[in-house]
Image (cartoon, rainbow, N blue to C red; front, side, top):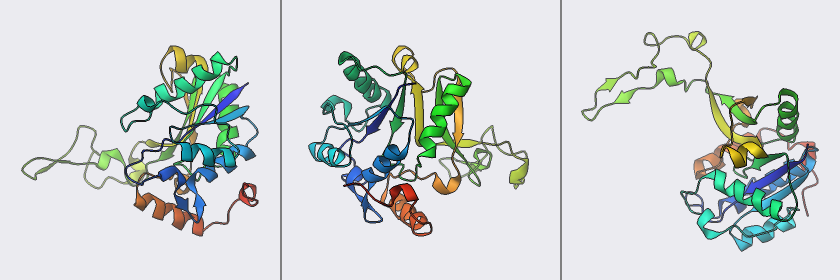
Length: 241
């Protein structure tokens, strides 16, 4: 199976300016994804999709292919992910470079490991699924415990609330939240169905201690604390020139 890795890293981040190049534990955020992708064995090629020349140059130094600069209209705050990935796939198809599946690698998930790349690829092949998407257990933030706060401040329960107040977590149905580190989709599903999931989506479960997506300075602080409590994996030891 030929699998294309697409690293999505636009330049116009609002929550954290130049987020994809910001430092996490003294290492550029983009480098974590570069190291995991380089150590994985299942990716045929990895390209960087960005509209920002500075990010493009940083990506080249980290070993990414940067075959194009993303069009401005695909790098706005409200741009969905699907057109961005489709643009990359179609660009390469015009260059006679086709792939069976596409793995979206968001730099905002720095705790992704090589096994979180190779494992989903093997799962896609084994199950014949349309896609594999990573999820993590919601834990104590279970939707059954959510509340509606009305305009007058009164608290009411949503239709999916727990059977009674304080129902033990063990008695609630299992719920999972997308964590963003794995979006693996067959190319025909992406292009023909305009979808990253398709009809048959398999779950790649990520432990909560690695389900970290960087959107705000608080997320950076949390990720730094997680990294400070674990040694950097061996695949990252040498860094990237």
